[in-house]
Length: 198
Image 1: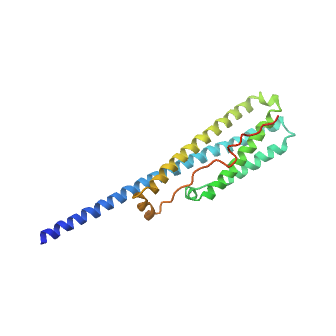
Image 2: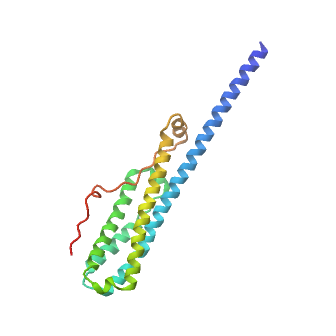
Image 3: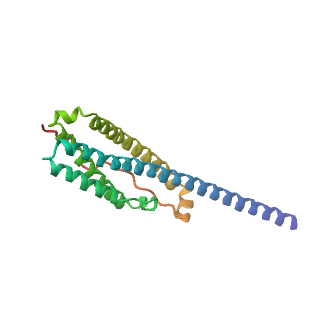
């Protein structure tokens, strides 16, 4: 009788220990994936900051050639100020509305930069200016980096959200307080090609 009780106790301890080990492993995987999402988001913000840092140089270069285009230059400057004013912390990534607000101000800056580049087309001397060409190339490269980093961020969010939602790991995620993250999504008018007029 004592031997049977001892065997049962050992089995219970092994089962509880196995479940605890499994829960700890799942929790650790979720922490790693959440940190990956946070790191990818930091990189998205990094390339947005790079763009914001390039804008004043671009505006100053254009100012010398296009003094009468003040409204476009002011739009770019205001859009840059709005874009740099909003910072999303990793904790805010759990709030889809905060991510939408961040996207909206970044899209305003993208639109203002597009209008600035269209304005530049009116000034052939500016288009051949080495400073402008270098800044335009850097800005184009930055826009490409933004697209790449947003894709990487969305891939990290996909992996994390999948892990958070798959059963039985979802039980550990719910108990430990892991929340799904919001994806970086295109704006509603992103499918419409931009209209460029000269």
